[in-house]
Length: 549
Ligand code: GLN
Image 1: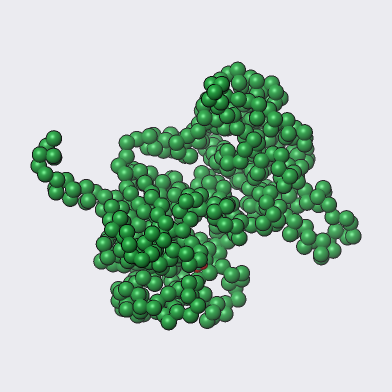
Image 2: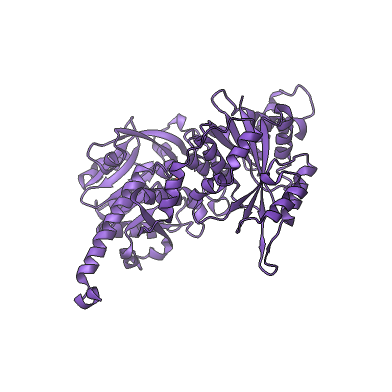
């Protein structure tokens, strides 16, 4: 029978509930259990697809095309689970479902209410993830206890635990224990208040996980335990770490996962943490640095490119180097100024994005990377702009553009496929989720993946216009990844360049610490090569005395 772990948060937002859930999931997997993790978000938007990355961070896309919360990225990276539409529900989507049922007459004339109709729908969304293959479902409730919006979700998990019984469902509450410099003390009062709030709506936490800058002294653990009505051993610390991939070990060191097993009446068995320990040692080791520039629009909000940052960290693990990323605002390069600043980087990336702001600056940077032979990686918008740059500056199609940025450009290199071909199955307005793509023998892509075909996730409205395929090919652009029906150009690349590749999909969503994405891996590999050769040139150029001293 499937068991449940409900993860709630108190005191503040951004305490790392998602990472805590992902880490506990990883530890339970290390004990041989099959787990899955779900996020329930109390906001009213039906999904985060329409929310600004400035406000909500990255939209994480699943294979089945769901636009979800970025915590699902952590779940997939830390564990073997694969997220779907069913793994992220919002208040908006729950209400939408209930309202649709009401309109269809499914409630047979009953008054539709938060309890039981909304709470039943929430419970359905949770229990739907139970299956004979799934031992444990972890459910993270977004927001903070005390928010009006989260009440129906909390009520639903209260009911669910009552229904399945205490040995099949437990509550873990993540709180914050601040350090007060003036008093020189860690403070437990906010935790006490948060648990009081939770208990007032009928939820008694089984485990209290305290996010803290410092380890918790024994007397503080005892105090939290006493006031919050849990055994002292159930008070654990989620201590600040310099790298998120250390969190599972920090929790394992306090036997958090064996306590979870004990509470859920599960055989704790043996745990194998070797891969996490090796990774932790690698993180602490002295590693050379590779410097990359990411040129984009949301650069002041690194959360909007969460999966990209993580994918670079993973590629760094593979090469045993530290990947240092500098985020540059593309407007800086708009008129072709400041481009020489890019020479010091080992690689240049243009990530995905929407809207015309800053795109001319990105095109300039791409031209610079192409001409100066700096490894280049373009993702989605980055690939589209690399095609436009090539059309303009190599193929002589000067007014080439994407119809996203200009109404009717003379050379419409990137366009909305629906403008010319009516493809019904494109459904909404974006191409979302996993699509297959066949790889050209001998290409960078084929070499990276070591496969003839791959499946990657998409999130975009515009496509490369195949009318221009032949003319750009004639000038040296390689289309190394094409959809099986020949309609979609998924990967472009250049020969005669150390590494220049653009992909229409988002490879960052599939990168994991123990399985770095092949394209990120090879891009960082190319950047590392440049880094080493530049260091060698510098050495050779420096005066003898200096080299000796
Ligand atoms: N704006 C482009 C499109 O919609 C690229 C989207 C993206 O980079 N995710 O096609």
